[in-house]
Amino acid sequence: MEFGNYLYEPKKVEGFDFDVYRLKPETGRRGKPQSDMWNNIAVFGDNVSGRAHPEWISESARGRGVRGNNQYNLHWDILCPTVQEFRAEQLDYIEKTAEETNQPIFLNSWHFADHGHCTCDRCDKLWKKSGLDWFEWRNQTITDFIKDVKDRVKTKLVLAVLPDPANADQRFGMDFKELYKLCDAFNIVMFSQNYATSWYWEMIARAFRRIFPEKPVYSNIYVCGPGDDPNNCPPVEQLIRVSVRVMRTGIDGIIYLADVAENMRKFQKAVTTKGEYRDSLSDYGGQVALDLFNRWDKIVK
Image (cartoon, rainbow, N blue to C red; front, top):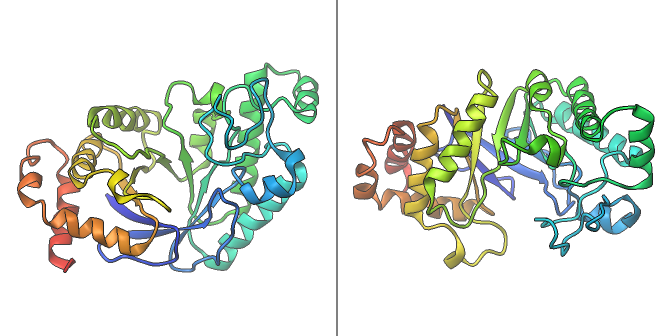
């Protein structure tokens, strides 16, 4: 079992088994690759490239893949995965990052924007030329991209999968059976500002444990993000409880997200003040999460 610290700044936090740096988040801004942290890269979610090349943005009958299109749950601009110029540049960038750091590559936003995407002229021509069903073509397009990544990355390759175990193929072009053959580990993006209904998150984790039975599966848990009002972040009791609930599903760990190291340490400190509450969860079956929190008791001041 492993637990990770996942930040928007290249800082490590004591008490975790590994650290992840959001090297290129969906804002599109790029940091400096880290040789002692996993490097996280958002591929087709890229505000910078979307502003520079609006013609690259994914299209659908319900509108473009941009922030503000309330037909979809989009928090950033998403590019069409068949833009060869951008696709090639991202492959080079991913390969160079792995070579320079010799650290795992952790990919986000490597898929289609959502259902109905992409219907640009280029995608329409490629789909019709393929002779495949629409959904089959989308799945193949994304699988081929991940194959290209795998050919170039010699370190551990981790894919972040969105929390839809039933419809991800038709929504995002995620062919789990093929991706399972290619990747070394999977991370379930389970971000929320409220984890009150912890059974829901447990159910999702359990589903992905079945989908990826013999490879590491991690769950993201959201502590706080850039610009968040602390009053709108998940209460520490919810974070403790959902950690215990998802770890009893047999997944391999949790990767906690915060904006900066200071706020991750505040979360750790808050956990250490909840000993009685943690004890009340001792018979839930998620002891590995409680063991992590017990470790923090010894190191957090």
